[in-house]
Structures are given as C-alpha cells and as structure tokens.
Length: 126
Image 1 (cartoon, rainbow, N blue to C red):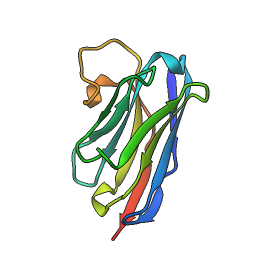
Image 2: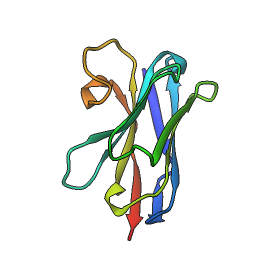
Image 3: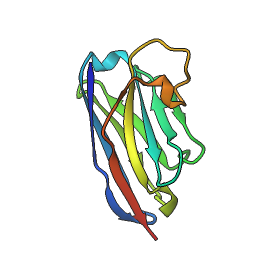
Image 4: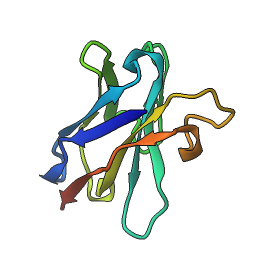
C-alpha cells in the first residue's frame, strides 16, 4: 500500500509560480515512478509530468514543457512539481500518482498508475 498526500496548491495570478509537493508513505518510495496529473472542470484528466524512480527519465506534456519541472527527493519520500509562468488554463485539481507495479500501460496515461493522492486545487486568475 502507498499513501500519497499533495500540498502546495492555491490561488495565484497569471504569470506566477507554485510548487506542489506529494509526500508518499508505505512502500519504498525510491522503487517506483511517480506522475502528476490534472483535471480541469468539464475536462478529461491529463498527464502533466512523470519521473522515473532514479530521476533518470522525465516526461512532460506539451503544455508543461518549458514551464513545469518535476523532481523527487527519495530521502524525503517526496515528489515535486514546480510550476512557473502559470496561466488560467492551468487551473485544475492536480493529483500525484504512484506507479508501483510493472505494467504495459504508459506512464503518460492514468492506467499506468495504481495509487493516487486526493488532489490539490490550483487556480490561476487572469
């Protein structure tokens, strides 16, 4: 079992920054990949970024490239999402997710993850 708790969401003006954190407990954090997803009202959940267990590999959605950075601190059992140059279209509930099992599903899709946090709201005002 893995428990994930996100924090760091809030209200920010366009052009501002936020750093989301996701604290994990349970299974050995350094053994599995992590991802960040988001879901805006009326829209499908979408991947934002993902990172391998050893930080060697990262993935970013086109919407996140150049603005967001995913990182992890395995000593602190925490994954981060630094978000810069935020825009109103970034408004969503952001979820972290853990990929603890071997699966054929891609890290870019929700079925590639088996544990989810409760989400944290990010609101960007124009």
